[in-house]
Image (cartoon, rainbow, N blue to C red; front, side, top):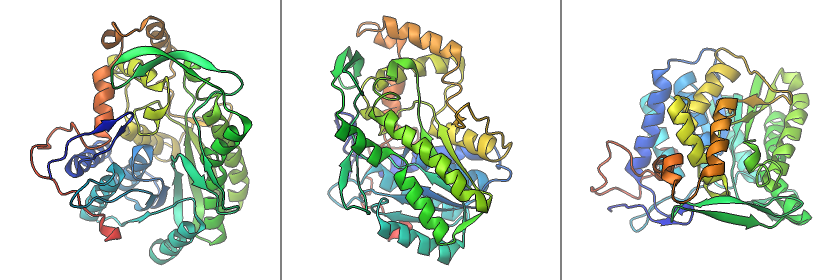
Length: 397
């Protein structure tokens, strides 16, 4: 099958198996070019491992630390008529690269929120690893069925308290216009916290600890974002922000629970990047476009793999200097939030419109990053050739 990108809104409905494989290989090359990460984990569980920061975490752990990894995700395989999701092909490529490097890699596809998935993964850890010394929690889902009450919750991207109006980039038409988003009601806030908050992270860690599969000195990390004031109404002070506050509450609870194991829970605040999740958030794509322009000019731009390599190499392991902020969070968004970077982005934000968008923003970089998420636009891939949409994940065969 000749696979081409088919974009609908902020989603690409096709993905390229060979392109996804190249994207994974490129990320591995970044990590390997920086050498081994000293003192890194050796048995790692990544919950939400197939795309974005979760995938890059798995790559950094495996190819930077030499770790055996288990990954959990919810993706769709392809068949002869249609392509699977990018996360499916990413995982297929990761497992093949790991096997070639002599690393154990096993993946589980299904509802990570369910008790059944937790039990299945725990049995795999017991059988194949014994214990894990690092747990990465990087789930991004629009809905969650809570196994305790059986209710399905759906998240929303809305401000809290009052409506929010600001500039927005239509990534399809490249028009800068205004968007107004009405505030969430309390039920919507509660639902978003139920989906994107820290409850499931705690459930995973509780289940792992009760099963005795957490190693002494275990570290666990969940990911968050803060960003500049211009995005706060829709993010930090909005429904997502309420969920992230809940994640920080869970981090403090987990610190206490893991104390008998000399363990530590962290929240890592990461940089704004083009991911499948961030593409859906109003206002953020315009901000990212302006940010990319500034940071690339300064030589400080990082993608997910550079961020996760730095997190593992300098903050969690390796040099092991977490540099927590006043709320105890690791900040690998530090280069993004540098005063000189934010001053230039703020100036561009005030000036940007449809006419000067390409001058002030990195529109091509945004589009390129978006397409790479689905395996398109990567050097060294012949997109005119047939690709096999039925490519499988070895451990799920």
